[in-house]
Length: 289
Image (cartoon, rainbow, N blue to C red; front, top):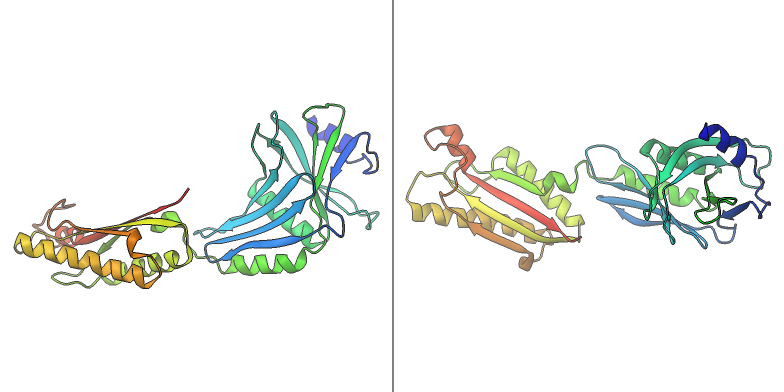
């Protein structure tokens, strides 16, 4: 019922009817799009909406393709508010029909967000010269409607840069490398083939992320050999990982290494499999909030 009333009531409201509709959208001269993050771990495309806030598309490095959209408002909603997102033609394209994209709910004191499929639809509509617009009832004046539009002017060049950034995102996220266990070959300082690949992922991610504050490196051995020798081996292994990290731009002061020797076993040292599991280095990474 609400959808029917909204489409009938909102989509037919002329933008020139300022007594009923307050419309926030950048003019031809004001409309600017910016790629504010362009790296293998994050892509961000932003658009300023004069007197209202900004529109932000973003995507993070991940195993899955993802896209988030946030309508960042200078003044957050004072109450839970239903809104309709519509693709609307700009004034210089008369006769082009409007198209409803989705319905959303603004939560109190939070920025507006849309489902991921709707975010992709918004990008597609902008690329076609359309103007995605949010319609909702004013929080303080129930007789007034508010329209918040994203201008397609000057969009395409920045959109192409954003798409290029998306194609270069790493196929794994911070969470995938924040706790990494590496294993060593028996009796030496060399990582197993699988752990070498894991280490390369950690190195690659850290080389792009300036927000990493602390890297903890804890090394362990199996129980074969004298304890003092195992202690030294674990320190050597931890320092080798530290050297790897420093070579990829992580400051020495942010890396804390500890060699635990043959303590804190994960499995029995009576089997080859168990000893393989106990010869390990655990990397734990923390970021600033």
